[in-house]
Image (cartoon, rainbow, N blue to C red; front, side, top):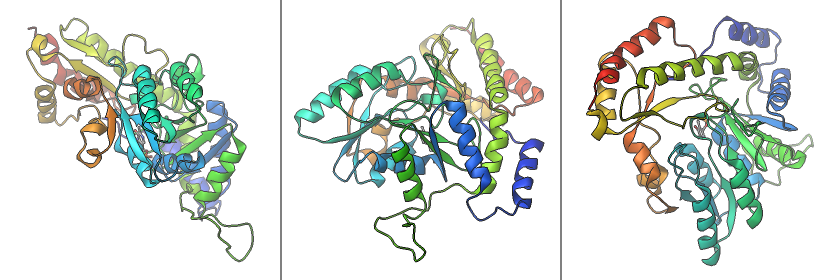
Amino acid sequence: MSSPDVGELEEQYVIAAMRSGWIAPLGPDVDAFEAELAARVGVAHAVALSSGTAALHLGLLGLGVQRGDVVLTSTMTFAATANAIVYTGAEPFFIDCELETGNMHPQLLRQAIEQLRSDGERIGAIVPVDLLGKAVDYTRICAIAAEFGIPVLADAAESLGARHQGRAAGSFGAASVISFNGNKIMTTSGGGMLLTDDAELAARTRYLATQARQPVAHYEHVDIGYNYRMSNLLAALGRAQLTRLDDMIARRRAMREVYRELFADVDGVEVFGGEDDHEDNFWLTSIVVDSARTGWTPAELSAALLDDNIESRPLWKPMHLQPVFEASGSLRNGNSQRLFETGLTLPSGSSLSEIEISRVVAGLQPFASVRA
Ligand SMILES: *Cc1c(COP(=O)(O)O)cnc(C)c1O
């Protein structure tokens, strides 16, 4: 669905890093990768970490989230967002989404804040998630957060390269988090980054990510630290990938166009995310299926693709429907559940060959010509 897209260039960068002798975790490629990514997104500071989840965890700690706080986040996300909230001792509270984008619904956010505040809860942070590579409506979400004086940590794990009103995803809120997991738009095999304009927050994140060592020779500690830094070898891989990011986005965009064309005349199938996708990074392309009109369900399509050894998956199962978060609060409008039930994510990777794309199209063809 979204395999790592790595080749000779990545090989060259990693071998050069190995030969440089900078193996033990930090080194010049980490510094350079941070500077290059910060420049690309247009933020002052970037801290390279071992995963997007680690970046979320330290971002929350850096914003002062503590045990007993409530943290508002999107229900339509990958579990890592909510897990990181739990690591801090805070409680996640899940906000439902806009039907068109799956992103946090601004009015529900406002309603949740008012409700929780009147219940006497302390809201530590808001963590909106850029779903599948479409940036959140930060104009509205950040305005609400500012009105109530609550910091925003943007989960931009899926949206590197996307924009909102011309401004890069990863540059919104007090800090943003990017993931370089193997299935993301670009990868370091595993890794993440915290992006911010706040020098103090960046320094605090660096300190906590390297075991909270005081700057003395004898390992003095006044805080609980973490071993969360990215290794120099993986940063080298990331630098190679970053030079190809725009090309990889273009390839994913072309994949979306293939699906748009294929389903253009099919009653009951929409390409997820709305018509206006010119600011997306096209990380994953999903379709939303109205089975009453198509005469087939997303599960039937998925099973048929699997027979051809082609991977597809439902959208994220909303967090408020997950057994592990059963006890957490949520404010729902039914949209996320509906997207979970009607959505299907199709092969979207930038490494798909022409032959593989033809196979996917052939697998979808019977469903693109059936009319209700
Ligand atoms: C992938 C992802 C993460 C976690 O990133 P890792 O690098 O895998 O730890 C967090 N949030 C969202 C929305 C993601 O898609």
